[in-house]
Amino acid sequence: MAEVVKTKNNKKYVDIESEKNNNKKEEKEIKKVQKSNDRKNSNHKKEQKNSLWTRFMIFCHGVKSEISKVRWTNKQDMLKYSIATIVFILFCSLFFYGIDFIFALVQSLVKGA
Image (cartoon, rainbow, N blue to C red; front, top):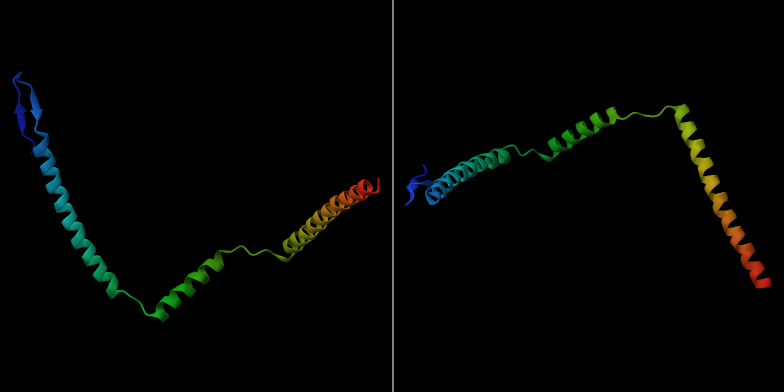
């Protein structure tokens, strides 16, 4: 693979250029193999294209399986959540109505003075 090069001081160094060339050759071979695999996979995918009706049926099956996983609330929980929502809406509306009323009162007092 890599060649050893001796220098004047008899130290051994690896020839980096030859090692780089070997790595490039290996990368090219890997890319060729990957390209051929990609071509094979793309041809296989083209053969597996389904009709519109088959894809629709697969979609419906997926929807059915997902709906079966949903935890539906019972009547008692639904009543609790509805009451809590109505109470929250009433509280917020009264709060903002009170703030608006106070500002209108202050404004009328300032104009009258």
